[in-house]
Length: 81
Image (tube, rainbow, N blue to C red; front, side, top):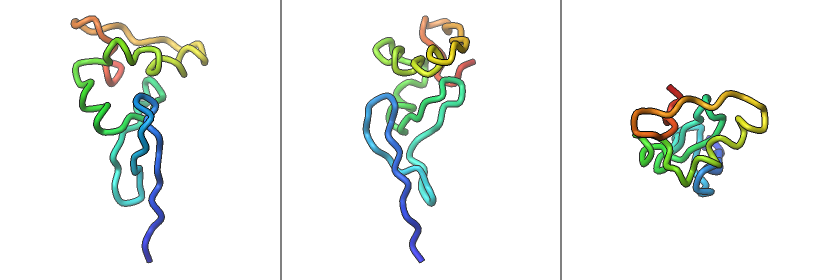
């Protein structure tokens, strides 16, 4: 019996991607509480690009949570540490 695909929306680029049950083409980034498609996640390996910062930190600001320190490149670390 085939499983129904679960489609999530990337919080960064807005594209839909499959997130289960068999294939996972994205990542939930717990530190920032955002869903990121594999393309956005991979493209920001060195840290979140400055044009994405507002989207990455939106839920943290809404919940008055701490925003991680910037890395040596001046970017917010992708995984939060």
